[in-house]
Each structure stands twice: as structure tokens, then as C-alpha cells.
Image (cartoon, rainbow, N blue to C red):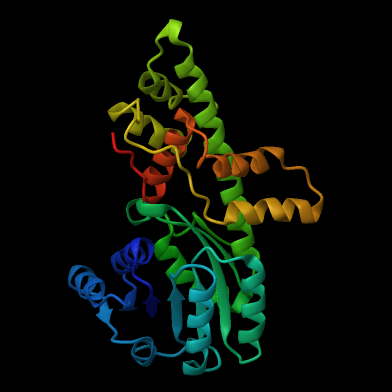
Length: 304
């Protein structure tokens, strides 16, 4: 099977590597010719000089996977891409798009006979090694066509990916996933700051987080990453207490309001990120460190 990948950044590039390891032929394009050349030399990916060139190098039905920033970059690329495709071809949006946008784009493409899949993609910089968790929304027909690709990207052929519902359902599921992620991260950050604040006990946070990784009810991959980070640096003085939000946390809170569902933990976790630009605290350093550990997100450093 052969497909195109448009956008070869941290996620897109590693997804190409995993696809190639899984025997999927990939034609890749990115605005950075250097990134394209390097990835091609490393993985055997076919090079495209443009989006149109990538499409021309695909057999029917053509599959084009986008790994681009949400919002206007994805919107504009889909508008440019659609006229290059034919009935039965498929566009996949693997970025963090708003599910309302995915529903609208899917309906627009369906009018032209072009399939659409919205893929909520989790796994961050560890996806290449461990596989990606893929939450996809599509018609049954599109999901069936995409199955070999999803199986190559997932941790295993029979797990780590799911066709969760119609178009929009994949990004909706990923949105809620990220809202939960905010809450979990905030809980760990607050709890560890409380442990650190009990100075009379002189608690070793690296020891405690490592302890919790084994048979504790709070054990998780997020805890694994936190324990590993604290093993090397418990003070985190070089990490600025500034924690951005990607947008999906905001959308989750808006959805809770729209549904009239109480979601105080998710809402407060989001608001704590808003306050991080003004508040100075250890918990924010932990949050920023966790984001870097699982997703490779940039860490804003202090002068110290």
C-alpha cells in the first residue's frame, strides 16, 4: 500500500518512519526540502517536490495524510488538495483539529466523492518506538481502506487504534482525551508540590515517584515520565513555570458547558495553565517538564 504524508515535523516524520518499518510505501512532502531529503535517506520514503507531485505519485484510491497545525494551515491545505483528487480518494487529518471543523470538512469533501478521516493521534515523540494511539472518525468504507495503515502506526495490529464513530468522532475523542490529560498532569503536579513542601520529612520525590510506579493505583505512563525526569533533576530551577495550552483543553471545557456537564477538575486544570504566566511555583515547572517528556514540547528556560 502506498500513501502520502504532508507535514514531516516531529510527529509526521516519526509516523513516516513507523509506516516504512511496517512495510507501507510513503511519498512525503514538507516545505523544508532538507527535512524531506533527510527522511528519505533515512527511511526510504519517496520524495515529492510539491503536494501535487505527491498526489501524482499515488495509485488509486489515493490516500493523503495531513500532519499540520490545526486551523488555517490544515484548512488551506485541504482546499488546495481537494481539486487534485478524484472520487474514492481519501484525506486524513491527523492533527489536533476542532471536531466541528472535521465534521464540516468531511461533509464538504463527501459532496465531491472524496473520503475523509479525522484521526486523533496520541503518543508524542514516543510514538515511533511504542506506536501511536489512534482514535479515528470515518465511514465504514473509509475505515476499512485505512486499516492497514492504522495497524502499521498502532502499537499492534489488534490494539491501540479504533474506529470510534463517524467523521468528527476521532477528533472529539482526542479532545476529551487531552482534557483528561490536563487533569492528570495537574493532580500529579499539585501532589508532588505538597510532598516537596513538607520540609521536615525531607522527602525524595525521585524515590517516591519511582515507588508509585510499582503496583500503585496511580501508576501510569505519565508517572513513568515524571519519575524519570525527577531522577535527573528534582529542583527544576532551569525550567520556567510557564505552561502553554494546545487548545484542546479549552475546547473540552466549552463542550462541558455546551452539554451542561460538570467538569470542575478539567476546567480548573485549564485555568491553572492560564495563571502560570503570572504565578511562580514548582508545580508549573513539573507540568512543563511532563509536556516535554511525552510530547517533545518546547520548554521555556529561565536564566538560571
